[in-house]
Length: 260
Image 1 (cartoon, rainbow, N blue to C red):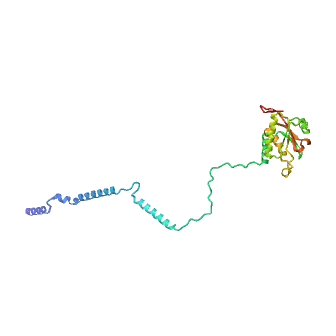
Image 2: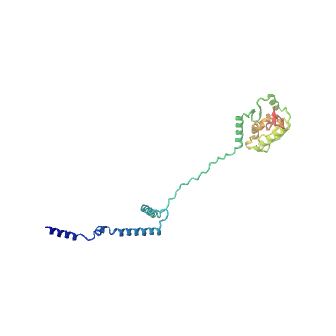
């Protein structure tokens, strides 16, 4: 029995490999080669990236490259679809830029409008302080509160005429300026009663005495109302319905202060 056991032991010993370390390292023998190959591939990729760098600002993302390609394809398809299409002609007129707002220009007032405006100003400011009466042939007026005898004497021609001025041949604007200069000059000279010949309007359009109608408004307005006390249609010997007596205030030429 003992001899058979020894034979079996020797057979088992012969079945085992001679080098136990080689049998354990066999599964990992290729790891070293795989590691070297991976390092070599990584090094080659790095060298390729250095030789072909990606431009700054561009991304290598596959999604972005796909979107760029898709946008280019859409643009190409759109251009192909719109080839030969002509834009429609519109009848609409484009409005111009109005630009900065400007104040509307006012139309210059006509002569009649100027007179109406002046009378309105006198009414508002209280400047129309004359009591005036007139008919087709006769006109007279006096400062409110003046002595009634003054207008009566002036109407009768009791005062001597110290100066006169003729407006024949003048336009309305020329006549107005002339009247103002004449009255002012007369007041400075200390004159009290003057005669202004305005005419009957026989040579005017429709034979309307325009200057006669304007005289009353000129004498009772502006600076003339501070110089005039009363006025009345002249007597026939002095021009009748074509002339006007004007009685002036007293004044001090150096100060131009007017008193009764």
